Image (tube, rainbow, N blue to C red; front, side, top):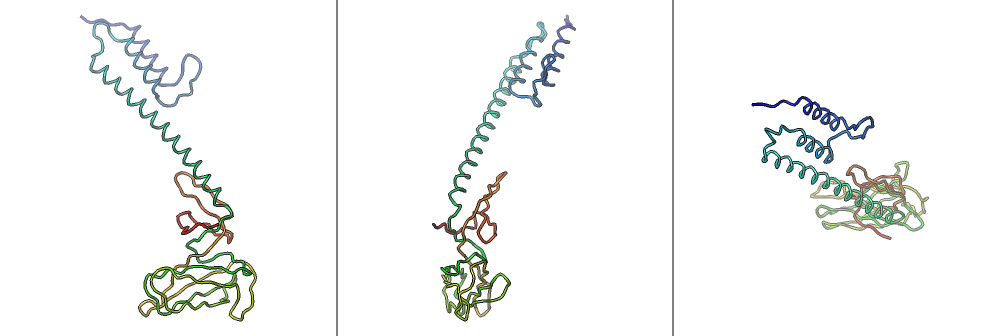
Length: 231
């Protein structure tokens, strides 16, 4: 014998439509996806409208409860991840504010130099160089000074520029480029330079990207390119 209850079935379908459309009565709830509350409402509606002569199987009911528990756990995990992301951004902002106005040593080929004070940089040597030099260029691309470092072993070699040209005249403060070269195994090779620079501002990273440091010479570099942070 079978029992058919058209009214019960109709009520169940109306309840199902209400939950999935995100509306209750005449007012919209604003839900666009099924959350744990909607899931629970569907489960209760299903139980209320089940056939009394053929009730829902216990194992199926337990499986649905397990799905509900998993959904709630995932939502709580999502909330926790969002909270961690907010804390990371706050920490990043604090770190960024502490860098403004600081002097950093960065992997760069140019920097802003106060020629009345001079500057000290570094040349990276992958192997021993028999002849090592650093050419200093002004903003027009003209060589104003060549610094002879002689023979250097593998590693970082420091060099100092006093802000003067080859004739001994003090140059104007401004942006200068530095190109280092060395004789490696008898071949003239361009070398990487690390130069001091002042951080004027910091651009915060978004969507997982790193912070960008805005330097006094107008260059923008990633935080990962900083070798050393000074005063």
